[in-house]
Image (cartoon, rainbow, N blue to C red):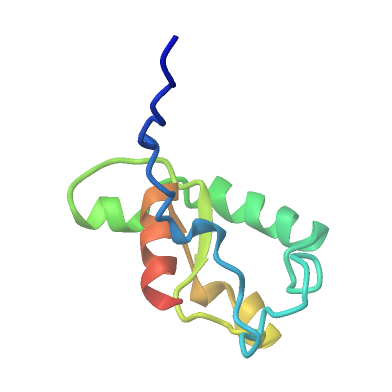
Length: 106
């Protein structure tokens, strides 16, 4: 019997920044979601906001109708709790719109 040839790898390494660590100089560094303000009180406020604002504002502006599943801070709060809780700074977005907006801000 002959020797087996080594097969070339067919799987490419994952080139995805979703699992990138938060940089040490980020306001989020070392804080969990509750410590950043996204605890029970936020979940309740978020649910109430989405009940009153059920559609994604970005999709609406583009002439599409999509359910808002995320409450986005129009101006990133970066730990400023006054800005965090200011409902005038909130907007309902669908998951793809929120992910895209957040990716461009980070």
